[in-house]
Amino acid sequence: MKKQKTFSTHHALFVKKVRNENILVWFLRFFILIALLGFWELFAYVGLIDSFITSSPSIIVKTIINLFANDNLLYHVGITLYETILGFLIASALGYIIALILWWSERLRRILEPYIVVLNSLPKIALGPLIIIWFGSGSKAIIFMAILIGIIVAIITMLNGFLEADDGKILLLKSMGANKFQILIKLIIPGSTATLISMLKINVGMAWIGSIMGEYLVSRAGLGYLIVYGGQVFKLDLVMASTVVLCILATLMYAVVAMLEKTIIKYKN
Amino acid sequence: MKKILQIENVALTYQTLTDEITAINDLSFDCNDGEFLSIIGPSGCGKTTILSLIAGLIKHTSGKILIDEKPINIKNNDMGYMLQKDQLFPWRTIEKNVYLPLEIKRKLSDENKNYALSLLEKYGLKDFVKKYPSQLSGGMRQRVALIRTLVSNPKILLLDEPFSALDYQTRLAVCDDVYKIIKAERKTAVLVTHDISEALSMSDIIIVLSDRPAKVKSIHHPNLNGDTPLRKRESENFGFWFEKIWKELN
Image 1 (tube, rainbow over the protein chains, first blue to last red):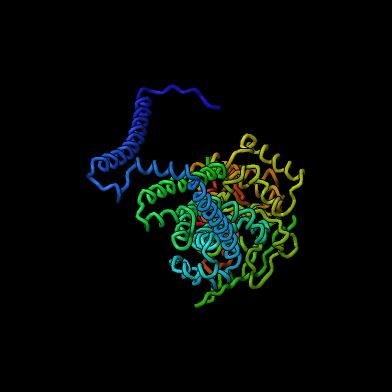
Image 2 (image 1 turned 90 degrees about the horizontal axis):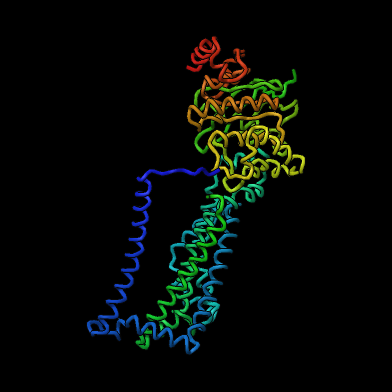
């Protein structure tokens, strides 16, 4: 169906302009990163800043390599990933199911509304001491913390997504004789995939907050533990190195969800 | 001719916390098989509510509504409802959109699927069967919406201002389109509109409603020359009827 089309020189100019702009943006992104790292390294090297307090890019790299060589890094990364991913999956799935139940029953929704509002505004970290007493000071407590932080947001986001369904479409289905379950299956669930994706994106962040917070509070292993431990014994290289690893992992996990989005939402193209 | 729709002394009252509102009061009219009936009235007079009543989506307070001489039954209804917007599901292909009523009524047999596909083919949508609604123009989408109402072979089509979301040019074309399809499939149609010329160009019968609570003010049989809405708009007594109904609405 595509026709071969000839363009004027203005089009070539336009394409070139857009491309140049993109190249500039990418260049400046890298420039900022390189400049930041370069000055950091340089100032630490000449003694303008105290590398004991601020560490330096080369020391961070060395620390990561050392951690890796001692087999420690993968162990800590493994623990944190396990807690984060499990917390993320359970919070998202449970949140989705609870949101479905709340969509189904308007009465239940009205009854539980104030509870959800309170739980949403409560800083979940305040429940830390309770969680430690209930679940002990291991991965279980940390996963619970990650779930607690993620689930409320998951419920609220999904419920709003379900309730946003077009009234006209609901009317249409009803006029065909659809029951509530059919409306759920044919309209509410497939119609809220965009909300599901944005909920998952938010929850990636929430799960990391939950697992790292949890590790700050109780753990004996994991990246959060390394950061707290490093801070306590003033090994700031360790704190910086763990933070860098954390940054990379969190970005990767977000990228996985973003890839999921591209495969699920085909019809938008 | 067989009376396919009979509405006798229907009233509808609904409750709010502070008020009790009579939306419809003593409404009576009927429609023969294969006729095109339009309901026209001032805005807010409850035109859409009447369609909801016929579709069985709302229960009337008193009176009788008979479809084919039987009381309405939502579980097993013979209605095709067409709304202002096409309401196609964006995540379904055109084909899957058209199957929707069959899925809901659990009649997704090969025979019915083939009938649906034959309708799509007959009305020029064959090449778009596997496409998504966002790839179609507004007029084509509205045609798909009409075919979706036809696949379950309804006795009556209920059209709730189905052209009002379209721009004027498309509107005239789609109006013609929809009229031809409805006539070709020999369906009875009830159209709700506030557009006098639209009602005149399509209908065999026009019911003019009063302000709320809605009652039948007058019934007209315009009988304009021409076999399509566009031709009817050109017919010589179009102006006469337009003025007559316009005066009644004011």
